[in-house]
Image 1 (cartoon, one colour):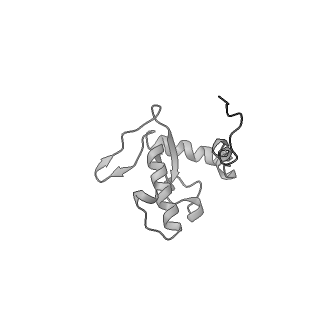
Image 2: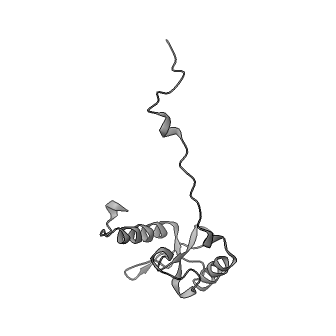
Length: 114
């Protein structure tokens, strides 16, 4: 029985690595790092997402957390204003980002287009 030695050309793109994400320069600055620390400290290193009256209970160090811009920088939010920040866990940071992206595209956000 013959063995397959190479993959057909159609299968090769499935094996390539996705392009690495390039961080904006604002996230590399000392000011951003100070802003992030101030937001994380103020919020007690705990996700601030609320679903009705229920607050997410994910916190550091067990979960990955993000200092999230409430109004995204691309939408005019100030990058270093502590009042424009909150802590979000990975899941809620992705949900918030999907909603903001959908709003910029003029779409109504649903779980189907997250």
